[in-house]
Length: 63
Image 1 (cartoon, rainbow, N blue to C red):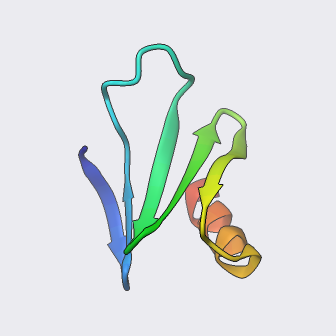
Image 2 (cartoon, helix red, strand yellow):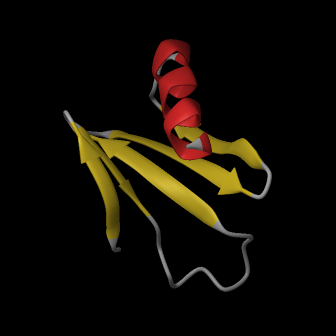
């Protein structure tokens, strides 16, 4: 999965092998994983990240 951005403990990346899903990005940290649809930007899945982090991630994805 190609990495788009690293900041602090977070890694933003996309998976190019998801042909049956709309475009999305992943944000990972340790055992937490979040996915955002890109068009429009919206939370797709959250596995363990608190709401505060989700707001930060969404702001970065919107940039």
